[in-house]
Figure 1 (tube, rainbow, N blue to C red):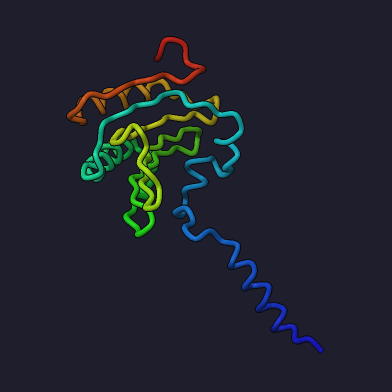
Figure 2 (figure 1 turned 90 degrees about the vertical axis):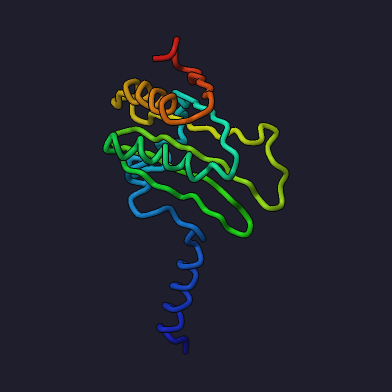
Length: 165
């Protein structure tokens, strides 16, 4: 006769093993995807790209500049930057559950060659809810980078944006 405890234990082990190794921080999915990760995946195109030259030793400074912007505007800020044996990364998400996600992300994997653009790090602004007015945020983000980042920035508007903001 099978023990119900053993079955329950096996079920718990299987369920626990399905969890991601590095789950998102608490509140991330609600704030950055409006509670549903599909909101950002289903045909949402970026509105703005900002590229900066930021060698790895300057990543903490870049993370601070991005974090400062998010906090100054009352957005939720998630800094997932890590230095692990297999990957080093700068990763900061600025989010509003009403439909905005701004992501700064660059990774160097131990076993992979560097990207051809080397020290370029991109910040991307997404609007995943059509009700969210992203344009004032984009203008402010560009201004913030121009004031706070010491090197030139490159601005590219997303494919759906006519003539910028």
